[in-house]
Image 1 (cartoon, rainbow, N blue to C red):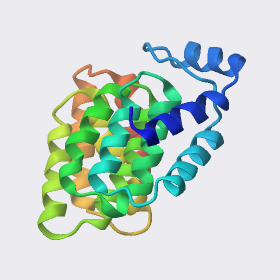
Image 2 (cartoon, one colour):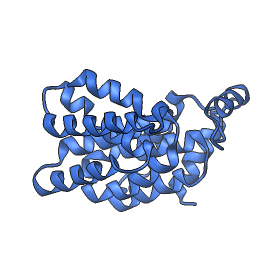
Image 3 (cartoon, one colour):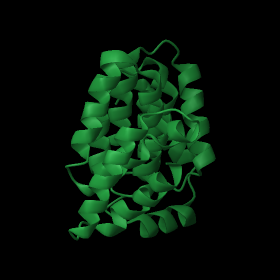
Length: 202
């Protein structure tokens, strides 16, 4: 484990609470363990780590996010998301490959939705030209893939759309694909909440 990874993991465990850990693990399920750290503690830990280990470049930040995500502990994975959120200014469209793996493995709204809203969406907003087109093509492909990727593709543009920007036509097409999937008995519990949120934003 890297020095930054050790620092974050130790801090999260120190901030943990046994009762909260049991509640989180039971509520989320899906094989996720929990240290019982609060969301505020996770955010504060990542902020402290970025101060302590200044100068991490894009590749090092991405590797640290993967390192944190690799262990199925909720707070570690949430820390990976917070780290990526802080790193959006240096991320590229090619980082969607790594993020796609996180979405596939997340499988709970408490992880999948922040990935979509706080990482993928802001990343799309700052891309332009060919890079934006390639990123949008990736999300279009997600709409033909598993339910959690469809959910992420639907949620990602909501903030930009709400601010009066974004590609309304593309979002509308994705919504139509999602609605067709729901009629074909797709996993409604995963996709339908995202459908309703995107519909409200359009």
